[in-house]
Image 1 (cartoon, rainbow, N blue to C red):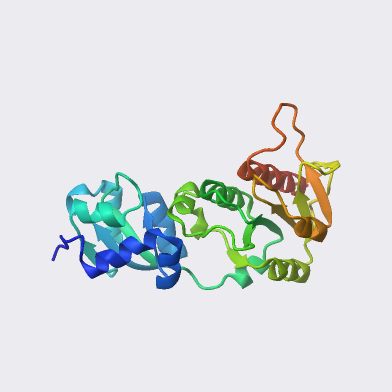
Image 2 (tube, one colour):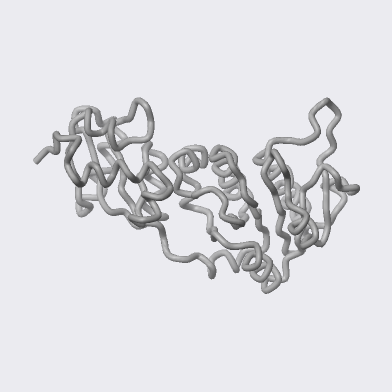
Length: 257
């Protein structure tokens, strides 16, 4: 049976998943895009497919065929437009639940990116891509962005489902890193050391703050070291995601030998 009404209670409930509050209250989120859905099927707890049969792309149809036991709900294009986040949605959405706490998986890492109070979903998504590429874990600290924000998922190309992460307070973040024995390296334009001057072969956590204000004095005081990225032009700092990528790849470069 196809759902045709935008006022259907289930449709209304899914539409609320566009908001952080709606996702938190329901304990669920939506995933759009075939590549992102593939990774969510492995790294999250899938609940159901929502689809417009006539709008399915071949790769989307293949995903449905590969998971015959997953419930599916057919909807009209108008209903899909209501529940989807993108302006021009495709033919398939995945409704899913977050995976269980990944403290154990994160603890096994020895390289971390701590995203402190970031404000732009695109930055957090790109950080997940860099973490995935370099084998790092992610800590979202100080009530930062919702990792299941549709724009985070999209910018991460679904790597939010492949990288172990935790959402922690400042105190819990520092306690976790202390337990892991990780040095805390803060990125700030006011540092004296350049980022390639330090040794990152031991367990290391890079602290990255929001672009507008940077890390707070409390976070800077909690760091074991501070580093900067040299800037030869008029800008005084780089985008948070670019900064994270440079730091993570420098750590990987050092660890080659």
